[in-house]
Every structure is written in C-alpha cells, then in structure tokens.
View 1 (cartoon, rainbow, N blue to C red):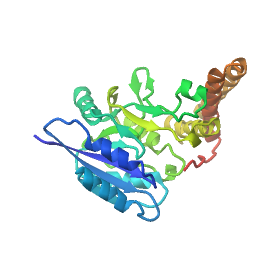
View 2 (tube, helix red, strand yellow):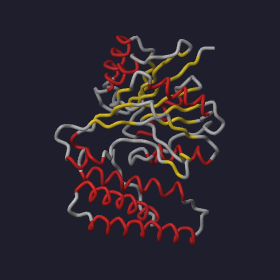
View 3 (cartoon, rainbow, N blue to C red):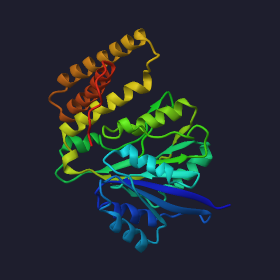
View 4 (cartoon, rainbow, N blue to C red):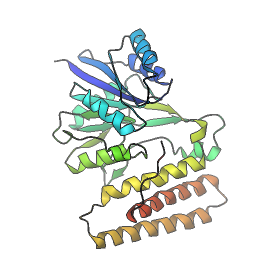
Length: 299
C-alpha cells in the first residue's frame, strides 16, 4: 500500500526556500512512499509565487501553492493543515535543508513508536562572525524537552503529524499567537493533553543557518522571554485557581532569582553567564504572563 506524505512549508519573502525544496527533492524514500509539497505564502502579496512554482517544477516536485496573508504564521500553518489531503503531514521551515533520510526517519519512528507526532533535531549553522559564546552554547539548535521521559510539547521546524489521529482532529494553530510566536508550543501542548504521543527521531536531522541579526544576546533574550510567556499557559488555565497561580508565580520567581545569582557568580565566563541570564529571561517571561501581560511580538 502506497504511503502519501505532504510536506508543509510556511514562507515569507525567503529565497532560501529554493534550497529547502532542493533538499526535499533529494530525499531517499522507500519505494512505497510518495511525497507532495504545500507552500503557504504569508506575504501580503504573492510575490514569491513564480519563484516557488518554477523551482518546484524544475525539481519535479508536486506542489500546491497557497496564498495565506498576512504576516501571521498561524494563518499560514492552518492553511497547510486545510490543504493537506494526506494522513501524514511534515512541517519544515523555509530556511532549512533536510538530510537525505529526514522524512523516512520521521516516518519510521512514527510507525515503530506508534506516535501521533514525531519531532526531529534542528542543527544550527552559525555565521563566521557569531560570538564565540553563542556558538559554544548552541542556543539556536532545537531538540524536544523531556519531562520525566515524556515529551509534552513540540515545534514545527521539524515534525511529522499523523492527522488521522483522533487527538489531532480539528486542532488548529491559535491566531492570537501568530505574531508573537509560540503557536506551535501551544498547539502541541493541547494535543498532548488530549492524549497524543510525541516521540523523537534523533536521526531525522535538518540544518538551519542562523542570520547574523539573530546571533545576538538581544534577540535571544527576547525569544527566551517570549518562550516563557508561551510556556505559562501550558501549565495554567483559568480554572486552575488563585492558589495554583500564587504557587506557580513563586516557583517562577525563585527560579528567576536563582538564575540571576548564577549569572553574577559566573560573570567572568561568557558562555556560563549568558546561559544563566537567558534562563532567567525565560522565567521572567513566565512571571509576566501570570500577571496578565500580553505576549511580545517578534514577527
């Protein structure tokens, strides 16, 4: 029986998508697997349409182009879900390149682990002028977080979804998070709470170049702060009660204070200092969200 998988790419004015498509065309696939691609263009005008369609045609890729304006990543992600005609849907970013066995490794793990969602690693490639501490800490690369051996949430930069799973049916990305980011954390947290099994495919690697503008402490601090804001609602709901909120706030504050102390203690060692500082930014983001502050917009 033929297995059909749709690869979804959300894009916004990135010519790097041509390299992403090329890496998809080079996938080493089992004989019983067919692949198609859906690209959701989040730009106000479909300015990249001709480039994307021409590239896909040259590479022999079966492409569905969807114009999904504007500048709200959740709109684009939902457009990919709405235009997927297959049981399996894989997300990859428009500036990433996939290893040749990327898709087959994701699918193999899904079958072996009976998973609803499979996550793969994202390896960052840093520019030559990136600060040494950023390269050493490798804070841009992405792998899932395990809590007591379980993955409770995920990301869309390298993931395979079984849309036939009852835990994923009718789920969509929150439009309110489409400009701040964190819409994927929210989505996967919701499906996990419904009973979805999230697994990790260590060999399903994709690579992502880090732009010089993102290889900075300022960008990382804002991102970690927003990640904290997004994380808080995955643990807290309106029905959790005031006592839970107070306990959650105290826990976040104690972690923030500890990170601040460690930042000072490691002040002479940049990689340690900034690592603790960024952890503190995360917990500070949790605290602000618990006070009712809106998520900051990063996009």
